[in-house]
Length: 272
Image (cartoon, rainbow, N blue to C red; front, side, top):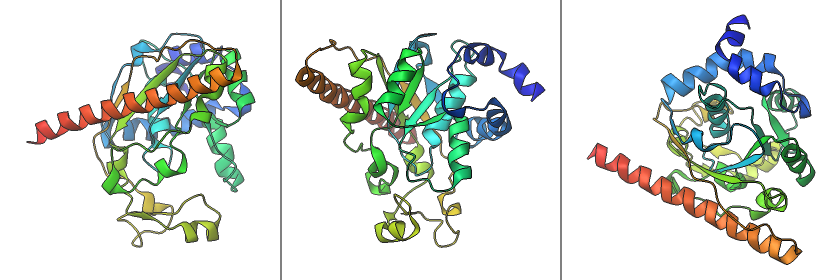
């Protein structure tokens, strides 16, 4: 813990001002930091660009694409922000956690900064000047077939509604590599219902490894790009607000897809 405090003192200084909402536990983060550092630097060799676009303080919403049944993109974002030398910040991940029946797993995610999705929760965090991240592809994005890697699932615009209602700046985040890290061949919905999970993805490691070890990851290189913030006019009328949210969800999805396409073209040129 002392080494953690020494290495991340700027992050600790900034996060000391942060909201203690929902049980974030620095000791838990300190315990998993060596693992996060290993997969960030050595296993996936994450290349992260654009963190300087985030404000050093104040509310913001990061909207990203998912690509794994496990929340790897969120954890890589968490590590990137806490280890940033120029702009270390605490971040809260708003997600649907109702499906998690295991109390230990639920508590572990909450202690790392995950918050159950609700409009009230998001608005409370924004009012506190907190940085929030969501992955609005939903379960479909978590179980994307490997053949469709790099292709986004339509964003759930409702997830962006609290941010637009509060006039919070929205930052798209594109992540390339997570689909390849844990290639999903298919999703067994019937088995998922039987075991009480939102999905049961089948990977090349199944049935050779049992769940959840079948979600083991390959050492693929990741590229993460935080894009320029979206701009929009804050509306007052309900119809106008919803129209604005739908457009922002489409804009965010389009910007992320365009960046993924650019990164893929760049990757293919290097391989060629």
